[in-house]
Image (cartoon, rainbow, N blue to C red; front, side, top):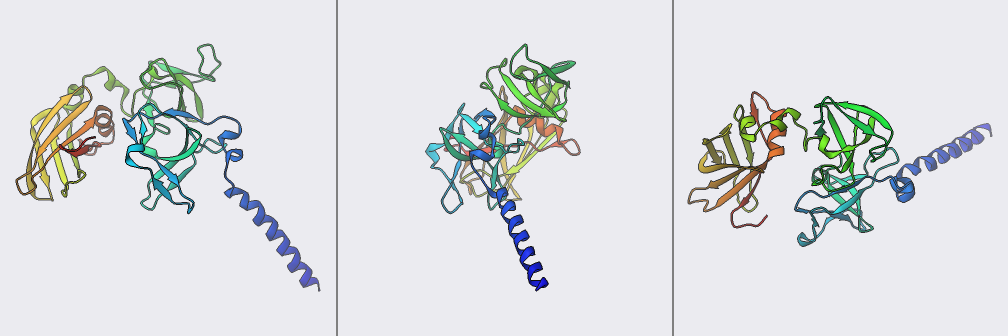
Length: 298
């Protein structure tokens, strides 16, 4: 009899614990930043930003290609009450952040939004963090020149240098004007130099592919020496290329042999080049490069 009571009591306790644990899986505005109107606001920086929705079977579904978010579209990032973004991971391991667009929940690939982006302090000797995005707001901390911070919210477009952004670093979180920061996680001293002056001391390697081209490319060049560029595809076949520098970064036009019958244009943004220098190995940087066939549109 006592054993039956013990079993019954244990079952009740386990049931109670199980019910309490289920609260972890609750979703909705009452369990995230929408509860106290504290969701971070950001804008899309790319010309077009694709996104996904969640179907009834709880699977991610990409939207039609023509329905991508346009540049400078405002989004709210849905975070837990502790500030952690809510996200879904697809079968390939890609991380999609939950956002609100026009009162609808959507999911955007984490690398396509600025939430969580690393940037550096550009102002010397430091930048003052404010409690609110106002000039006369309470000071909550200071960040040293060239220190790395994480961007978590922005009030205005990135084209507004005096616009406020919210950043966090080493348990310090506050607002400061965008002009006090770089646009990526690279040495803030680079902002005082021309792109050619920075690149001339490093080697660069890129490998990847272009949509619609069945070829794996490997492109190499030295600093700003356009004539040093070499190109291979499918591991052993030679291709030729022309390297150009511009205000936005670099552009490479690749000409493939007759058996491939294609031309490919590749480009890397200045921020991607500078960030790759920070993570280089043996003086060789591997920047993020995008490629398309010349007949394709971006």
